[in-house]
Image (cartoon, rainbow, N blue to C red; front, side, top):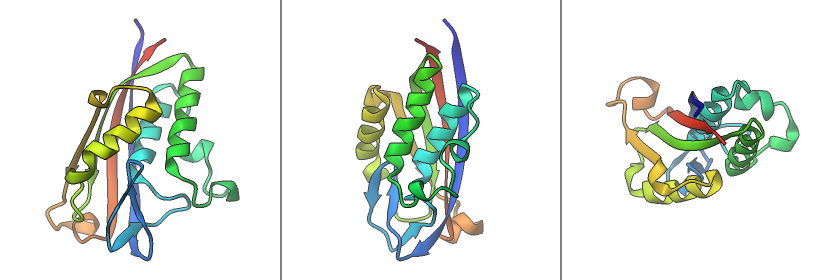
Length: 159
């Protein structure tokens, strides 16, 4: 069996008057992520992990922030379309392991909903979507609530 591993990371600035989406779920927050799309840092990191595993570059290559058709797009669509590209290369998802770095609000209460959204889009069991959250202990831009970051790793196997 042929397997591939991919790694993704994404960062977005946090600002007022924007909604905060993490893993396809709107999280109540005073600050939201700034970006061309809905700026869902977790889904973007997962897209990059999947695309990278099959040597398809990154999310910005396929869904440019210079293209007006992606302005304010729901990142669940980007995740779905990225996975379609992975399937075209003959691979399916084995599992996802991801970490969100955010001082507040707390992500942990939303993890089951996030796992449900991601597992449905990627056609895998919720148990195959591991989401963790951490803070930066009030250090640097992440700890000072100026930014949000996510890391993701995925395992793909040949269909």
